[in-house]
Length: 431
Image (cartoon, rainbow, N blue to C red; front, side, top):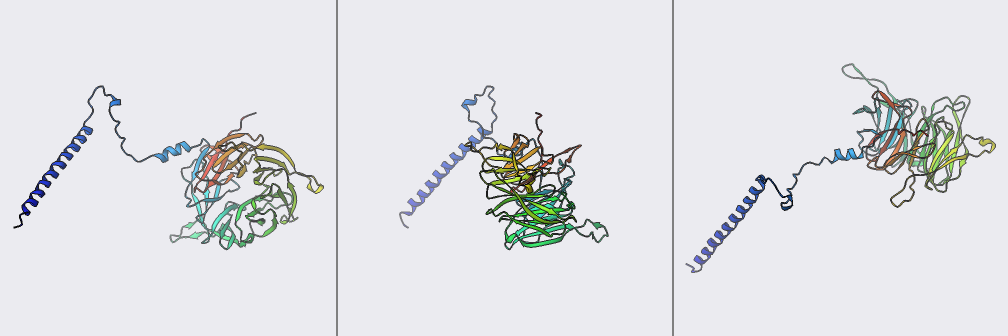
């Protein structure tokens, strides 16, 4: 037998004994620590300074509820849920009881606004043809007629959805009619994307009251459409490198465009004796801003235009002039934009929308929403984080919407955060 084997065996036994004693001592110490922590503190006069603070137990954070309470603005009425992607367009029906939304998930939703304070809203779902991304939406002659612009790699398309035939189910119960395409156009605007669409009833002059729609591309062209038939009734070019947006006056008379330059071009839609739109004429320019105009809107009486510019000002223009006698539009008021960044520099407004009574102007910059007195330019209220992303569109309800036992004038905003929010209008201080 090898004489070294007993020595090796003895070494192994001693190592095992030492390891046992070490781990036994360690676990006894840990057990003692656990008992001391679990033991209640019976000291009638504990000294908190001499004792370590116990760790707080881990729990699921309730940050969503707290954050919602922090973000909740007094004018924030409700949120329309159910969108699967960024919301790119919104539009109220003429009676204010329906709100159509265009979403990048390829779906147009028409929400029924029976009560602005409702916990949930019923909506009609319209799936666009596959591959299309809706960029704007506008109601045509009634709440069941909707025009949608959709963009694909091959260009922009327009679809008008109207009420289809009632559908009979197997149990012989008649379901609500599904919307169907009444007219469509493809590769409009030279394959450019459509930025904005605005519609108005042709009530000026000999207009027959039908809806006229102006679609504005990211290029330089604007097309005027007859809402019901889909017929193109006019085509104009801003010749200003690229458009920001274009709007149509509430009475269907004028079209105005905000584009790359500081000047705003205004066209008039001429109606024939039979009430149909005949042609579109360039009639005036608004000159006075020192930098590009980012957005504009017509006042409810169609006689004035409000513009916002990168020069840090807003202007109110009188366009009710005899331009055929060479009368120029006049600047009625100039307001500084009351919005500053952290360094104190003036910011510009991205979007504007005026209330149907013409008293309150809603304006946005990024995710900030402001309400201004349209007469004085003074800030009435501000929601600094109105959405979790930049606000993509905003629109006032044409009429007050029921809310409980009351009726309220509502502003709707939408964003890439997949939300559409409803806001109450602030009160205007009496002068």
